[in-house]
Length: 200
Image (tube, rainbow, N blue to C red; front, side, top):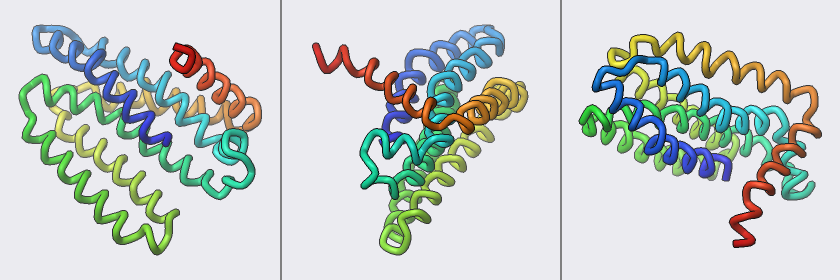
């Protein structure tokens, strides 16, 4: 479930934020918008992933009850993989804007094929190993996409360090000592976010 939420958010960011950003860059824009986009992505998907990673045991029992506690590690791994996929959406948007859809297709087909292979090979042997492998697959795909766009975004390493890794580490460190409060806050935010849709 966390992975699906992050992928949905990534699709929205890709079409609304990143594609217009890179279209302007192609017309002579600068890289400041890239840093702002990564900051927004980290402040939303990154914050949720950090809280889930830091509080996964408390969060799962709070939402689903103690009977589902064994699913907590899977939720943490799915959140990590989902955040990686969300970051990858930025690179997909850049490749699409610049007409490099063949590269996007190669990455997508590799993701699909490797996902099927991982599930078939590991799902019956170890769900934990399967979840870890799927998370690693998402991280690898984002690294591959970043490598494909390394010449288009020369400031990419610095932007990732300052707008993604540093704030994500700070959020993770802040949530880790207070799992009860952080998990409760995330649940309440989710309830607040879904309430208008359910009542409509």
